[in-house]
Length: 183
View 1 (tube, helix red, strand yellow):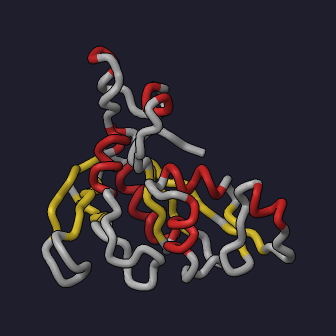
View 2 (view 1 turned 90 degrees about the vertical axis):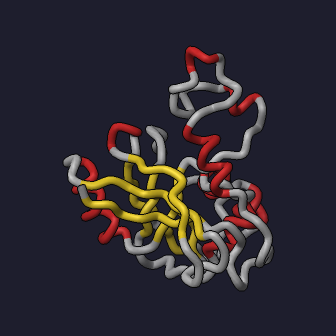
C-alpha cells in the first residue's frame, strides 16, 4: 500500500506572527480524532457527531490545508480505492532538517476526504466584510467561512490568516479532512 505523508508543524513557521511558538497541532489532531469528553459508548464517534467537544470548546484539528489541489486529488483517488493511506507526522525539531515521528496512519475507513478550497477576488474590503468572517488574504477571500476554516484547522482566525497570507490564492488548495466532517 502506498503511503502519502502529511507533516504537521510543531511550531509556527518563520515569518508568522507567532514564529517559533508551539502550534499543538498533534494534540489538536488527536482530540479531533476522538472526543475525550464523550461517554465511553460514543468514544469511536468522529466529530462533529458528538457535540460534547463544542460544549467544552475543545481545540481540534479536523483538517489541514495544502497547496497543489490537483496533486492531492490524484493521491486521494488512490486512497478511495484502498491503494494508499495517509501518514500524519510531526517534525521532531526544525522542519526539513529533523526526523519525523508518525502520529497516526489513516485510511478511507477513518472517513478522511478531500475538498477543493478556492478563493474569490475581493475588490473592496469593508469593516462589515471583516466582521462577517470573510477577510481578504491579499485581496482574496475563501469560498467557505474563514473563521470556521481557521477553527477546524486548529488555529484562531488571526493565526490562520497569518499562516496563509503568502500562498497563491489564485490557485485552488486542498482541504484534507482527517474525519467524516465536510463543509
